[in-house]
Image (tube, rainbow, N blue to C red; front, top):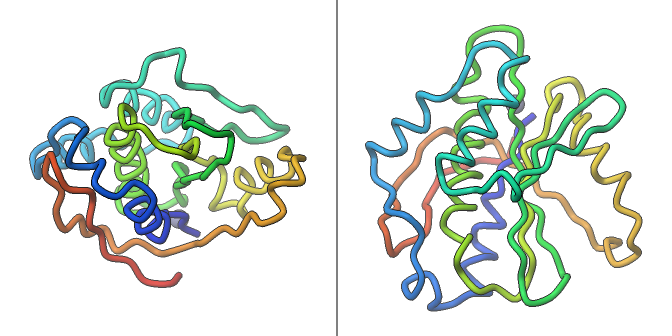
Length: 186
Ligand SMILES: [Zn+2]
């Protein structure tokens, strides 16, 4: 299972026209993405801390990073306040399957997630943006389901998650352009 907000990226571009060029995030280069990718770790138990460290590397303060604990899972939540309480949740899971080190599935998603946060952190937006790295998604969408159940506001009735399988290809992003990625339905 992969949750990567490819569709939401398009939505972002739609509701903040022009502002990307005005207030760019930190420069992102092929080298910086490679460096971010190197921060993945092979043990599931170590990945939550790795996610926190990546967000910190990309500018998140300790006070901006929250660990939401549920019965059997922990999600890493980093919020960026907008002008309103209307909220867009952007998610990627940080856990991995038993085999391998989970670089593509799904550290690529985590890297995009954290870089999106960095890009939008200092940008005025109407909506509040909540970046979430979900735990135990490979165990059956445990982290995202736990978060969804915890949201009781009736306004969330239009909540409509969009799941996409990322291919791990980061096409381009410079200091004044948003991310371009390739994806396919899972
Ligand atoms: Zn996955």
